[in-house]
Amino acid sequence: MTDNPLKSIAGWRYRPGPSGIPSICTAHAMAIEAAMRCTLPTPLPLLIEATCNQVNQDGGYTGMTPADFRRFVEEIAARVGFPLQRLILGGDHLGPNPWKSLPADQAMEKAEVMIRAFAAAGFTKLHLDCSMGCAGEPVALDDATTAARAARLAAAAEAARPQDGIAPVYIIGTEVPIPGGAMEEIETLEVTSPEAALTTFQVHRQAFADAGQDDAFARVIGLVVQPGVEFGNHNVVDYDPEAARDLSAALARMPGLVYEAHSTDYQTRGALGALVRDGFAILKVGPGLTFVLREALYGLDAIAGELFPDRHLRRLREVMEEVMLDAPGNWDRYYHGSDAERALQRHFSYSDRIRYYWPQPAAEQAVSALFALLEGVDLPETLISQYLGGLYPDVRAGRLPPRARDLVLAAVEKLAQDYVAACCP
Picture 1 (cartoon, rainbow, N blue to C red):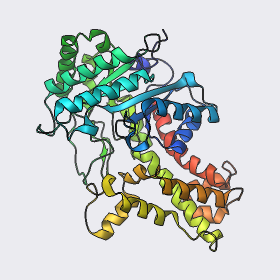
Picture 2: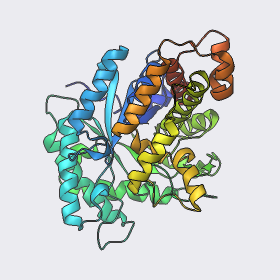
Picture 3: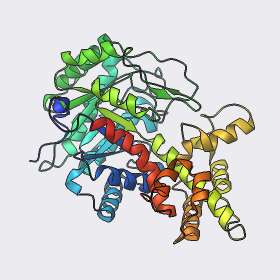
Picture 4: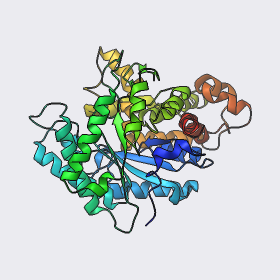
């Protein structure tokens, strides 16, 4: 049996080579392709994760099951020339979250079906997240209940995983940020205390033992904590190493573990590097990738309007506005303020809830029509400077072709490179 490359991640920073790994949490094909292109020249494996809301046995918002998602990613890898042996697939926030409106027993039964599907499909990095309450329960659960439910899901995954494949590693934790970022503006965050982290670890160890899952617990590699990073709709809370010093030091009392940092989107390259150095070796990024992708698509849309005013009559932003208004479930309760303020947030929020709508047929058709209109066109440097200014220096220097698809991929690669640099100093 091949060893899981993440099993030894706690020791990476004591040897030459990568000292951490980005976790690419997206189901957008172009964002995944850009991450592959960015990772290919490095010694890093590529960790791509699907959340419980994106991908599950019911299809999630992408319409894909775990087996579908695996095929989807592998098809992109074949097109890019990314070796499958360097690819790690993960499941993020695996637990009752998609069904938390149901009673706990029903929600957990569905969560078991989901994690079995992830394990059977060969996902080898599984984040167990049972921290949320279900119908009739508190919003956040106590450590013991969370741990017992996590152990139950680990048992389901162990029973379903291919026995001749790579054994999965697990991520545990109780102080788990909301998937996709906070729902309000944030001024300060309380960093997880060392005592809370140690208690979480010990309670999970006991729960796994009680469930007969000692072997699975031996493959727990990471703990989700709050290092003091987050983003809301309008602002980003930056990492402060001094505030996380005691939490970082607590890792010495949990041999073989690293911390998994969620919501690292929009952190600076320097902050990402500091996180890795302080033991937050798994850096989750998702909305940040599709945020810069949307910026690039909207920039191309503006360029197309300048070049082809008589042919580009249906603007991408107009299409996306209609798509979101027709199905408000993924943004309505997250965006607040006047109608004008909510309209801005639909397109320009850090939370990037527009990402839920790119798989919609009307959105896909609009993006395809934009690329078709610009196919084979060398876009003027002056318009790239105006509407895609961050990419202009590379275009001007001849490092980046002034073509539509190249520009979008380069926008995402530029962000992904911050994560690669943080993990491969």
